[in-house]
Length: 126
Image (cartoon, rainbow, N blue to C red; front, side):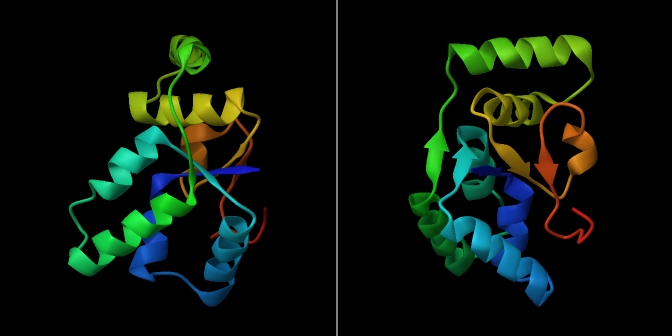
């Protein structure tokens, strides 16, 4: 299973991707997908969406399994942030993937490399 990062969902709605990338994301979503509660806040609060995009975003989140922050994730965030410099939202997303054994689907693989398994659907070398 996978945890889809905010940036992938924003790119998906914007349509700013080639067909193979869109197909891969469709494939990941069709398998059933997870998002962190952080992604819900970032995605639905993204100020670059118009009314139509915001409606689509809401429908995408309804399809997702939202993973909320629990004590195990909190402890993993603390451990991760003591070992390396990482923004708090990214640390929460990484910890969520790690605690639940999920591969993180993101375009920002450098932010998460060495913390959790990652896939960049924009990079065909995965």
